[in-house]
Image (cartoon, rainbow, N blue to C red; front, side, top):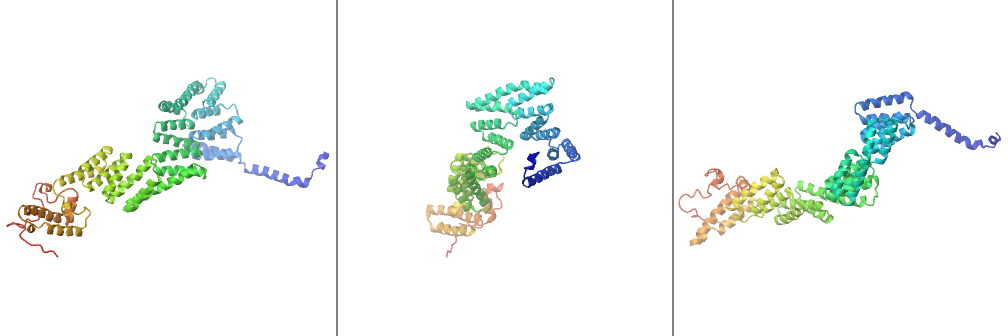
Length: 491
């Protein structure tokens, strides 16, 4: 006992005090058996009602209150299993077996987790151990005998992938995933095969599943973001790349890609907002900025060209719009771009081509009302083009104001007044003068002009259902003699 005399008690006393306090704190934090049982009871009730998240909360509390009770871990593990949280279910069932290695139910559950994860060798070992403990356990026996075939199929999937036979790999991987839906590496492999088959939408679906299963994969979020961007889903790509940066703000791939996608997404949003506000100059400018920022990814470039096509058309820059729409349609046949092209063609009086463009749009989207309306309008305008075009007669644009129309009328009427001509030229002038007066009557009257713009000539008796409609020859009041026996006085 002499060694106790040599101890420097002044130095070790503070340590002993801290140790005692720690032990006391540990005991004070442990829940009482009654509290643990209450949590277990509530967990069981919530589980029976299918409220798994609430059940999990109480099982967490029960585990914290009694960390040495294997049944509590087992119950929590079954909830994790039901929620599809394989990683945590596996941890709990393994903890159970560390505490009580002969608890067969936990081993069988762990075997099934391994099976769903496609960890077939581990699953086979656990199923085998269950059959040792329970020789007549039908589930364990049945699953044990299936494992070797699953191992062989997994080997074949990998071989097909390495050999470039992506279709065979996809088909066999799909069969395996029916048994092993939590196998992240198998879904990742199938996603790569889908990419090899250029089925990017299916690849996106699989990579989303992989990210849900792994939850902390920066590479997974980067892969998903790049695929979505290739599909032209820029805003979705931005959301996924942000998830990568939440895990690693300085990620060497995610950060530069984020900056690019953010810029492109802003340009697209600017185009949309400017178009809605009828600020077509800004829309056109934003579309051009987008096309300077991205010139490699086809579907993103298409979006830029489509906005350029749309806003140039709405701004009535017909020739530029036709060029932009053609550039967009080179990349993708799109019903709305075809409608914009149709409108641009109408603006250029290319009625046959406009009709064809609207028909193509309807072939792509049979119920698209804009295409139906455009086709009807183009057909009416084509028919009218074979008759009289009042805008051409006065030499004004379709967007001309009433003042511009009256001014053009006066100029044309002065030029083609029949009193200024003789002989055969006088007959031609008379016809032109009648057309000029008719053009003035229609285009200076808002109601008649709207009817004409809709594709119907208000002065055409056939267009007024049965002839003799509400509109009349502009010179009907000259019933005696020539309508040209008068003088115009122009200032």
